[in-house]
Length: 466
Image (cartoon, rainbow, N blue to C red; front, side, top):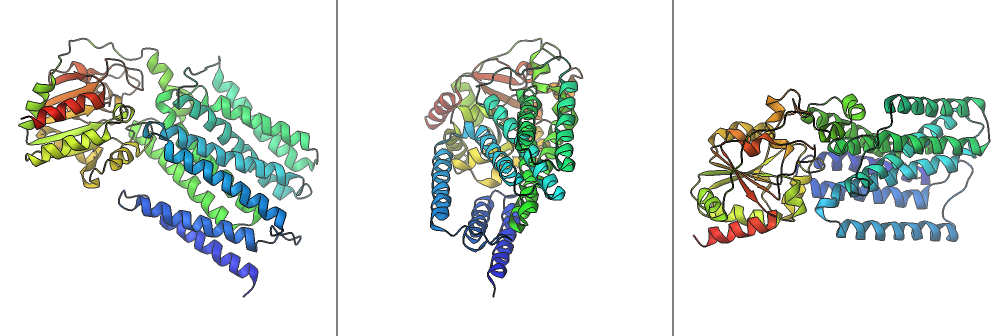
């Protein structure tokens, strides 16, 4: 059995584990194991490459100095990634995903820069290198801007006059630069570096104008870019596992992007060029007229205690307050008293798909109680109390009633059909989309103001005293 044969077999094992792991990620019960399966495959592929790969020129990575550099880099990267992931709060998970995705794009771009001088006389390989470099660079700089928007470093979106035209021109310049470098056969590295800088600039200009409400879609789209850039790296090195991984990431990111756009009822073109968050914050939609009514902790506890069915709608405010453990305690108390409790999960609740699922899983909420929007909406009419905790835009009736609203047409949770609605919020401030919520003024709605963790803790204490 030859060395290359063994390496190909390891790559096949790695590719199969990627597919199996991705499949297992589709269900909350198997997602953790799916991650471990895919990580095992990646480890096998990495070690196989280090110890068995030999390029056509006979060079290997098994000299002592090379192994020292490789394993040193692996150790540093593993330690930084592990500590960062362990310490990150659930509220910061979306920006962490964006940051890690940007690092993947940066790796793809750097690979292209390093390989250019080794392939200057092969137009086909130069074309692959330029494609990987430009797409990876756009993913890197765009992901960094998305990261800054999500963590609050970059609080205001920048919209230059005719920015769509400017971005289109920059995109054409990137394509033209790639084509010229590929077909001219130039070996001048400064032209490649110029194209690299141009691609970085386009990534910034691509993301900067997009409003915060659309940032989860942008992150998903940039993730697909990183996968595509990695796939070009697989072509470049004739590396099957790198190619498979890149294709899976690219296709999964694209599918997720389309699914999120569908959940928001917004075409991808409109997300990229419409700057949803900015138009919303500018005051689009009707101003809401009416009055609100408060509810005390005691009244809320009595109402929920004597209910037959309660549906909890978690939102980003729940994550900010780190109230997932308290809400699980509330759920258990109600169920001990014969109340049926479910969680209504909107596809874009939180800051990214699955954000609420992971948050609630952290507090050991039964996966079977997490019900998707399509399944839970018909049940609201038979629900005694809906408790909305920190959610805003995903329960806003304006999506169905106000054609001038930026969220008009977006599928929402039909909480207004329940018998009673309790909304927990810090204040009457607008949600992520920057628009007022008609639900707060509904005759069935009572507002429970305050920090989610504090309010829910008091609610739990009140229920225990009954």
